[in-house]
Image (cartoon, helix red, strand yellow):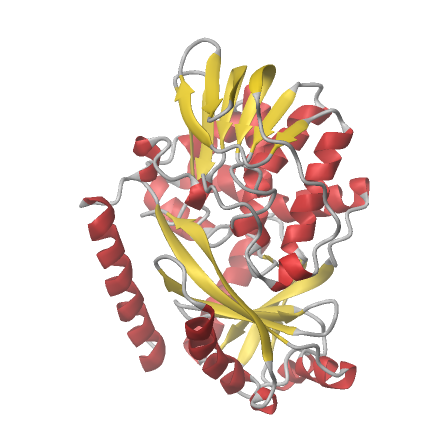
Length: 428
């Protein structure tokens, strides 16, 4: 986990709700459960367990929400990076049925948390999948039929004329509007969940990077200045886990996305860009995504890289995409630029499992982390409480390592990004 002290300079950090500076872990502590990582996966698990009466300690290497949970596009996107038809084809009908029953739960958990704990994070309903081509639109029609088979009743197709009420851009031929999706201020959601956990007696230690986990009936989680003995450990570092557990690190690839945020726009201009107030992602393999913030900025992100980028390069990469979508913003100043890593798996499905009988992990959201991580926290808390059926539905999926080690994984990502970018440009 990272030793960086503070949040990166992002729009989210700039507009974050007040939050306390939490102490480092020092000395020896006891807990029922020790959670490694204070992002969505760790916070969701910790909050579910605290609600069930467990004594939980969360250890964070930097600040609450420092990683992907505080840097992402803020879009509540349902299902998984590979949908139920792919799951059925690869892993069978039973796996598709079980995972399909949970595919829309993450978004519901987010809304439950916001309502129950009065979390101020600019929740707005509705996300849009926008199609450039008829082929993409046909695929969205198929997605609608598939999701309806699994109980989703809040989706509608948007034709070309109907796009005028969604987005003021002429490049799309239609879209799928998911009323159960939406968008939030992601860092403020994480901060609110952390405060909710602490209100139930939970403890979070920041600047407390975990350096070792000693396995045993009671595991011992060690930092530079302290340790926690716990009956159960939850490993929730995801793309920022590093080499703490090498067998997990070899099965995922941290890769990054770039995000920019404009200066505040005039309210009339902001409303004209996205009249419905929805967030949008396109249907390309290397997709772009965008939305309006609560203070009328356009937040625009996309692309896939390995590692961070400097601010000037981020603007050089993203501004042309933004202006292509909204030419009216060609002279608009970009005020914030940042990158953040997410964790990719070979199958593009999450990896969930146990090490020994008492160390649980979830990783590899593959771009669907905002909703999936909240579901992951619930199913891991269920398993720790002895109800493992839903946990096992994910744990039974194969978890393949990336071949060739870390260097070759980076080369694979670079080659893959080039290939999919070429397919996008050719409309394949």
